[in-house]
Image 1: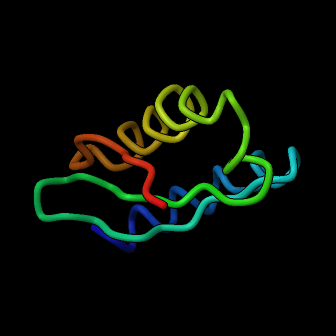
Image 2 (image 1 turned 30 degrees about the vertical axis):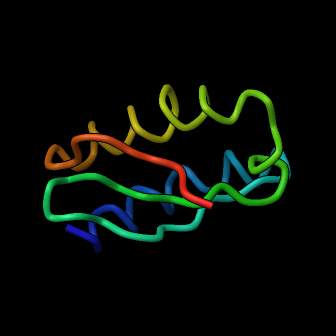
Length: 74
């Protein structure tokens, strides 16, 4: 599943990079929780939670149905 998540993140990454940010995959748990680290502008943006939930999580769930949720870690 990690490979599928990496592939999906690769499709999302250009949109984040266009705004000066990025996302790093930290862990994919057996329960389907994806842990990511938001970097650059995304790490300090007040809208980062919306980006995480409405953008990244929504896309990952569509591309990789096994994903249950996405969490940001430091």
